[in-house]
Amino acid sequence: MVTLTRNAPNELGEFLKARRAELSPRSVGLPDGTPRRVPGLRREEVALLTAISTDYYTRLEQGRMQASEPVLTALARVLGLNEDQRDYMFELAGKETGRLRRHAVQTVQPQLQRLLDDLTSIPAMVLGRHMDVLAWNPLAAAMVGDFGKLPEADRNYAKMVFTDRMRELYADWESTVRITVAQLRMDAARNAGDPRLTALVAELSELYPDFRRWWSPHDVAARTVGTKTLNHPLAGTLVLEWDTLTCSTDPDQQLVIWTAEPGTATYEGLRFLASWAAGGPRPAPGRPAGR
Image 1 (cartoon, rainbow, N blue to C red):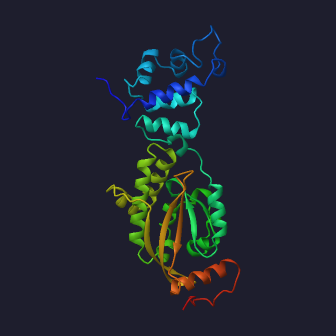
Image 2: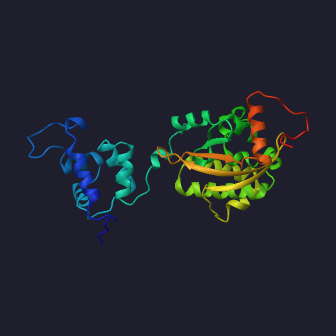
Image 3: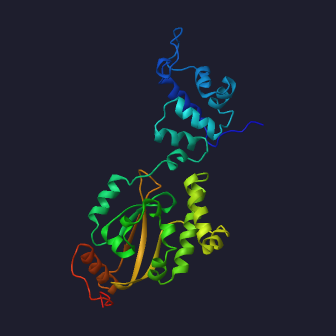
């Protein structure tokens, strides 16, 4: 039975034809051969380079066949598609986009780093795939912990919430961890087959019985907004509202910020921590700030 793509008219076929029309045989390592009536590669040449039959490719371009992800990946390589074009082709074919990019090593986007550098009174950090902490500002380090002192492999929020420090920091630690595990489960759905994620889940499962218990029910949650209460050793009780902003140039990177209503004790506590992080005055041991 013939399976059609979900888009009508045949946008995927038109896209493939437009892309192969831009290429010459020489550009893909084929001999020029005889003169052509129309510019670009012939269907049989694209099929040859993609290692599929000419009939398969013809039916795909005509909208009479649905391509598998491996075939689409091979076509992206043969046609020299950039990242946006590749994602667009996968979208037209009704497939998950961006899988190859998600398996690549992430670095913080420059615009997010500049934003972090300018945020001096609001704790903020950038989370990547699998809840890796890609970047942070000094106030986030003062509030949650010095990420820079951790080995890069341990700079992961899902790992950090199970540490003794986080158990003491979060007033409702169990609720926080259960939400974190649910968010990681959601991440797993978007990054199925990623070996780094598989290794992370295996490590957490081996180290923490609580993780195994809360991972099993398949509860999921997206990172959106919420409220956290922290028992900070220097700033005292902090009741913070957190929000998540997704990077448009890399949706797998999210800026997480914590804010407080001006005039509240938490707001004053954040101001104190900002001063402390910048090398300002430190309180006497055991004396919480903002009190």
